[in-house]
Image 1: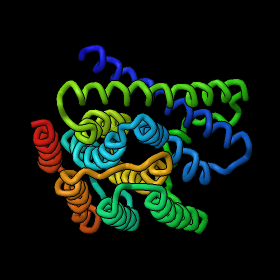
Image 2: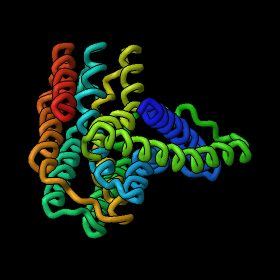
Image 3: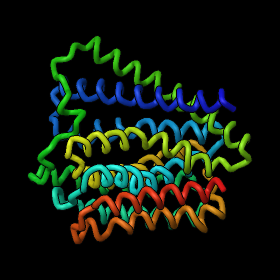
Image 4: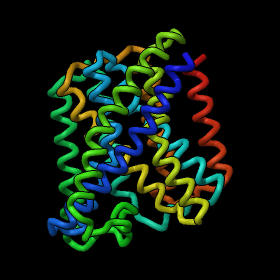
Length: 314
C-alpha cells in the first residue's frame, strides 16, 4: 500500500513538472514563430496548463478505469471552488470586483448544466464529447473575438510574463521533449497506483478520482492561489477557477470519451453531480453582487470540502 501511495505521489510530481515544461516550451516556440502574446495566452497557455488533467483522463479510459476520469473532472471542479478559493480567502480577503467574471461565470453554469444533462444520458461516448467540444469552441471563439475587440485582460498569465522569445530552439525542444515524455509517464503511474489504492481500500474508482486524483491535479492551482494570497494578489483567483472549471467540463471531458465509453454510476448521479453544481452556484453572490470572500467564507468553504471528502470515504 505504501509503495502504491508513493508511486501515486511520484506520478503527480512528474505530471506537474512535465506540464510546466510543456507550457514553457510551447509558449516560447509560439512567440519565436511570431504568434502574438494575446493568441498564445488564449490558446497555448490554456491548453498546456490543462494537459496533465487531459492525459490523466485519457489514460484512465485507456487503462479500463473510466471512473477515475469522471471523478477527476468533477472532483477537480469541486476542489477548485472550495479549496483553491477557500484557502487563499483564509489568508487574504478576496475582492471579486478587481476583475469582471460575470460573463465567464454564466459560461461555467451553462457548461455545468450541459454536462449534467449529458451525464443522465450516459454513458459518455463520442457524441457526448462532440457536444461538449462544440460548447468549448463557442466559448473559446467568444473569448478570442472579445480579445481582439479590445476586451482582453490587462494582466498576462504568469507563463507569458516569464517567457523568453529569444530562447534557443534546442532549449525549446528540450522543454517540449520533457513535457511530451513526462506527461504520459506521470499519468500512467498515477492511474495504475490510484486503481490499486481503490482496490485496497474497497472503494470505487470514482471515489478515488473524486478525492486523491482530483486533489492531486488541483494542487498546482492551489499552490499558485496560496502564493498569490501571501503576496496580497489573490483577487484574480476567482477568474482562474472559473476558467479552469470550464476547461475541465467541456474540453477535457469533450476529448476523453473519444478514447472509450465512460459509464456514469447511479450514486454519482444522485449525489456528486449535484455537489459540483451546488459549488458552482455558491459563487453567484460573489460574482454578481461582488461580495468579498472574507476569512469566515474561506473557513466555510474548506470545512465543506473536508466534510464532502469525509462523507465519500466513510
